[in-house]
Length: 371
Image 1 (cartoon, rainbow, N blue to C red):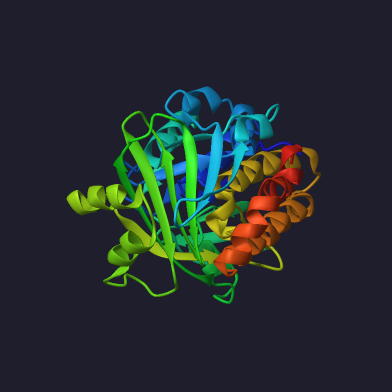
Image 2 (image 1 turned 120 degrees about the vertical axis):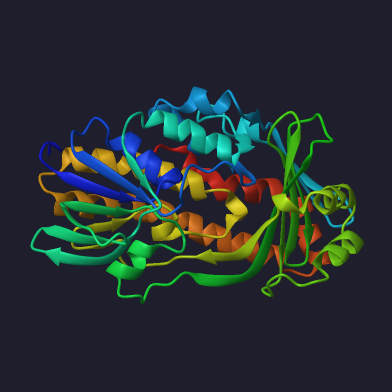
């Protein structure tokens, strides 16, 4: 099916939305993009992209633009909260032939994706407030009181998706994972390009270099939001570089971003001519760093499905059939990893020292193949 004469609305100007714009570029449809934020992201923390994510960036012609401003991560190191090493992974070797693992500021990734969509117009500070299926088309009312009609509406607007709420009658809310996450930036103190995590019981402290000057820090706590004493507890319970990273946060609290970790599980990703992609459809715990990767894969597979099918309805069915096994695998593995970190530390440490590397390779095994 060719895209000429087909009008598409993409809701969301983040990774999922911009990747979908780039993937659909050659299909020939008329594409509109709306984003509720008032402008391009110029702040935020960091992001880690595994090899299957950078492979998709290559397919979109964006890999060089991203890797040029990223740090290539060659090793992942896991330790307990006392700093005793549990296992290491040579991720460069693990993802060889797929793509490099890289980390970078989220704002730099957003800049590269924006550059990649060229002159496709984005209406900033706009979002839908109502959707009405009219035969094969969807009437979309926006928050400026305008209404436009589309052949396909794609919700790429994240874990708290407005499109999911409107199209699924509000019954498909994201569900909490019992983790409240704190993310911030600190100066880089280690020249080695290593992703490093310390594991407490049900808690994790992670550092990743994202530039020559900066480190991305991540800590997930229990379900209670913004506990006043979380910094003191983290400082007392975990070893260095925790104290150094917290000192940097105390010196510049403006870099802190906090919120609950949530997942989205749906029986179907479409309703009529409305489709969800990325975190709007299948958000998971961040412990496998697959949010951006799955969104990038979604974009490429959707473009292929649209080009190959004879109808939009057939394309949406084919897309979901092709993606389900892969996203379900990621969901199941994130559950296993969260469960493992909740084990009693003595048992968890013994298991991870013996089987950690094997378990890690198994987690990602199916993702080495093309989606």
